[in-house]
Amino acid sequence: MEAMGEKWGKVILWVVISTTIIAIAMVPTVTCAKQCSFPAIFNFGDSNSDTGAISAAFGQAPPPNGITFFHTPAGRFSDGRLIIDFIAKSLGLPYLSAYLDSVGSNFSNGANFATAGSTIRPQNTTKSQSGYSPISLDVQLVQYSDFKTRSIRVRKKGGVFKKLLPKEEYFSKALYTFDIGQNDLTAGYKLNMTTEQVKAYIPDVLGQFSNVIKSVYGKGGRSFWIHNTGPLGCLPYMLDRYPMSAAQIDKFGCAKPFNEVAQFFNHKLEEAVVELRKELIEATIVYVDVYTVKYTLISHAQKYGFEKGVIACCGDGGKYNFNNVARCGATKRVNGKNIVIAKSCEDPSVMIIWDGIHYTEAANKWIFLQIANGYFSDPPISLKLTCLANESIHHH
Ligand SMILES: *[C@@H]1O[C@H](CO)[C@@H](O)[C@H](O)[C@H]1NC(C)=O
Ligand SMILES: *[C@@H]1O[C@H](CO)[C@@H](O)[C@H](O)[C@H]1NC(C)=O
Ligand SMILES: *[C@@H]1O[C@H](CO)[C@@H](O)[C@H](O)[C@H]1NC(C)=O
Ligand SMILES: *[C@@H]1O[C@H](CO)[C@@H](O)[C@H](O)[C@H]1NC(C)=O
Image (tube, rainbow, N blue to C red; front, side):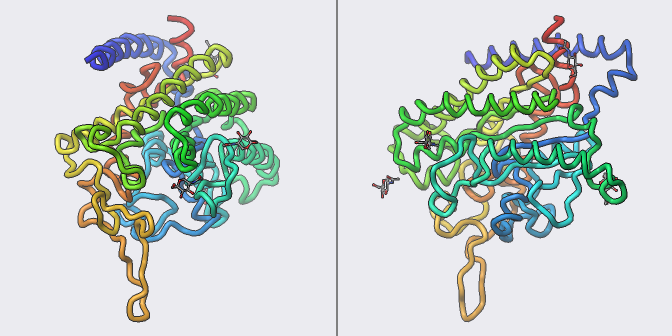
């Protein structure tokens, strides 16, 4: 109930601030409209926003990924588009190419540095040992920095490069989006740490996260849109791997300890964002509570037009339709032919969880629609007004 009060407080505050912003926007209409049209997006993250990097570097996400929207695997772990795709579309920009994808990419309106399995902190295990991507957030920052320096230089050569690389001014005008942290939480559990031990390293994780934001600001980034981490305990891959006692499962089927650790991370992330705002005074830093939106959807699936909460659409059976050794798209050799054993459900549009780890296009779209208007953001500013939020913070 306290949360409800807080939510209404947020809504009222949003109305006040948005009214103020509309008032500001009404006066110099032309300049404000210009300020808020992001010409590019630079994204950092994990599989929640990877649009083709891990596929380009380590092998394509197999079919039936992509089945709903792209009708072919498209470097995304989903049947269709991700939240970052809906963000790009709503800003009138093309879907982001992965920086690591050398085939058919176009970086005119930004680049995506996210890779599936990325953590904020570099891991001390290889990808083949633990499954985590070697392209942790610090590496994504190096790639971004290199991309910026080289694309500015190469674009000056003209010709096709002018049609493939962003204008120099886009780097300061772009929207910088972040969705990372989930794998930092699971990494500790995979090393058999207790929840207390996982919590103990979260400050270090967020210290490294803040350093990356500061570096991007140092390179000219000004508008930041930061997703918090989702309800880890509602995902089949966690529920399957770590069996819980009945008391540890909430009434929607989610594992409470993992959701608590995700909320602890989010609380610390929000604190880190508050500190960053003090230091990076020209920046707009929006903290987006994706956790609440995802949890609301999973816990009230039917109310929002979905059939099931914590059950995966694509899988090979079992309690959660998730089998860690035969994940979505897994094949088996039968009579000399490869047949897919971990298949898509009949209608992914009525399912929330795609493959036990990631969300369906339908869920991603729903989540995007909730967060785009700012109701779940701090400050409560819509995506399209994000570039103006620093004004309202400083002057009102
Ligand atoms: C990796 O090992 C180094 C050196 O022992 C340590 O400082 C660092 O925290 C470790 N990283 C992780 C993610 O455990
Ligand atoms: C890349 O995308 C931009 C923006 O959509 C477009 O103007 C440009 O022509 C594209 N480049 C190529 C080589 O097709
Ligand atoms: C974690 O515990 C499991 C089960 O006892 C064991 O098989 C595994 O090797 C342990 N992993 C690590 C990294 O210690
Ligand atoms: C808000 O950000 C814009 C764009 O980076 C900057 O020009 C402006 O000075 C900032 N406003 C404040 C009050 O810091």
